[in-house]
Length: 130
Image 1 (cartoon, rainbow, N blue to C red):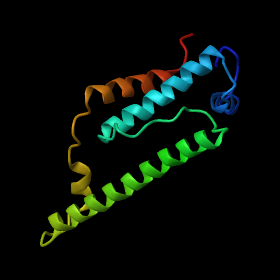
Image 2 (image 1 turned 135 degrees about the horizontal axis):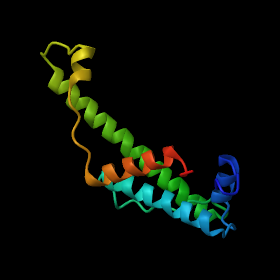
Image 3 (image 1 turned 135 degrees about the vertical axis):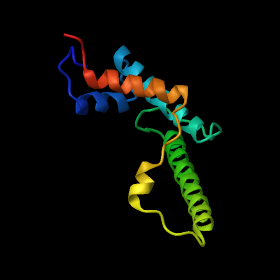
């Protein structure tokens, strides 16, 4: 979209327009859908169908979008509840950890897909080569 001097608002309006058949917009739409699939896989939820990345225009597409969003929210809520319970059980009887110690903990190394996504984000942030 840089070549067209087109901003994000215009790009995303086209992206969500189901009638838009611009090849660059279609490619961006596929990337968004691929990202949704990757996130679902990371949560081990590949069973959730990903709707098309467009504004729903029919009752069926609206229902699919709402179902997708509701299922994600429900599962995140359940996951949060489970993790909070686990943290509560693990923390019972232990002294609280200082914020400095929590910050010093090492995070797990990202998976290969995470590294690829990080590389793509870094490349995108650098912008086009001059």
